[in-house]
Image (cartoon, rainbow, N blue to C red; front, side, top):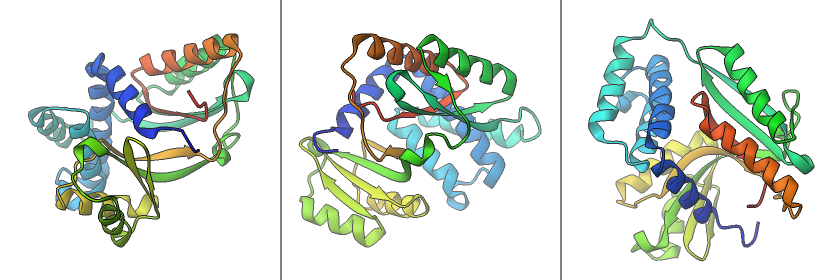
Amino acid sequence: MSGHSKFANIKHKKEKNDAAKGKIFTIIGREIAVAVKEGGPDPANNSKLKDVIAKAKANNMPNDTIDRGIKKAAGDLGSVQYELITYEGYGPNGIAIIVDALTDNKNRTAGNVRSAFTKGNGNIGTPGCVSFMFDKKGQIIIDKEESQMDADDLMMIALEAGAEDFHEEEDSYEIITDPDAFSQVRNTLEEEGIKMADAEVTMIPQTWVNLTDEAAIKGLQKTLDLLDADDDVQNVYHNWEE
């Protein structure tokens, strides 16, 4: 993974999201609703909700919008029921793709996701067909320009809090955790006043694939753009080294 800048990808995603804040706010709003349903409206007693709030703030969601989302979810526990569904498949040249969706209509979402794969010359596979190529990990990215702390000190804080690994990139620091330790590590960094550019539990490819064929790149980008535009799609993971 040498030379693969995670922070460049984070910034790229943030820029895309800045151009479509309604999309990312919809995604986070659904995550808030699910978190409140599962663990209640108090983030002090609901670590999943606390993590979603941190994600919301990292995406510049206003505090009053977050509060309204929590209150709405707490008052509508018996209304719309969102279901988490994961799809796995292949893009051009066998690029592995995982799609997480939160939906209130499985048939609609399945049709849209299948169409996105087909239009990009890929195909949906069976559950588990590509997920073995990824590791589920907590990933925290810190922009070097936003950090005043020495790398060694930052690494020790992260490792002592329960992180598995620490990487220094040219423009950022990357902290990797077990999913179960993610909240604890993120909380510790937050308490230390360390600003995080991104912090989430994600799927990290074990290996990255480089594409050189222009038709394959165009097809894969079409699939990713269609998935990104779908309000039911929460996250898309792939092993294409852009």
